[in-house]
Image (cartoon, rainbow, N blue to C red; front, side, top):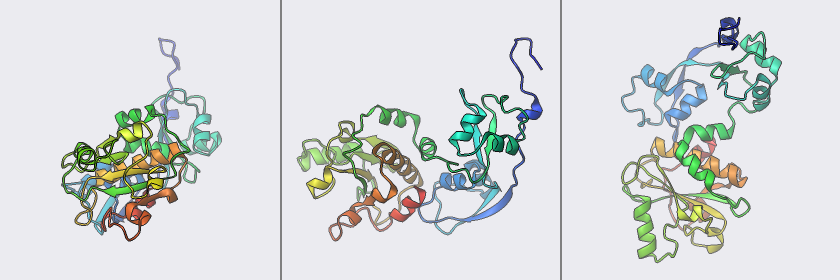
Length: 297
């Protein structure tokens, strides 16, 4: 059917998606999990979980809490068609075939898809949710833009070390002032990145330090040879007393994913100050779970 403007209108029948089997599931919250991570796991919206469980404070999820997950899907991934996409391009991106996508979505003519159309990716695709796509959901566009401008020396960096500030209140500015004026560090802030907790910096806000912008050695580890090869990330908070906020963990995951991608690292290269320097420090505290972070990665 042709419109008066001369453009082709996709018949409604071709735009319909294949029905997806949905069931309500129960999820037990694990240490370090955030609502966004849980929603991603079941491929539902955060809002639907909040509404189904009448959560008054979605950012305060305790380990062991039971959540009802409404409309949990059969494992299919949602994809929205973008400019320049074809069904073949989408199939290649997700490690499947044009025929499989056509059959799964009941698309009679694979050449007739339109921008904004929802496509279901069958379960089992080797790249159902690629790391870069996950990264883009966790990092604000402004931060991704800033990070993208930096000329990263990918061969220099061999790992990522997580720290905490050991203070309940703090900011990148305060840490920079302390490192510059009290510890007499020429380059100021010892870390490459700082992530706020809402007390001195916005909760989950990421500060990109000058050491990362200029690809300078860190100052966050005792041994200078380690500072030359390890990226330092400091989360504001005392994790001997409390746990990182969900927004901090989301920001940390997104940032670490970015660093892994830019520096060709895998999750085995992500560690903590205490693990890197045994018997020297408690940082980042007993309530920070590196295993929970690695599960997310």
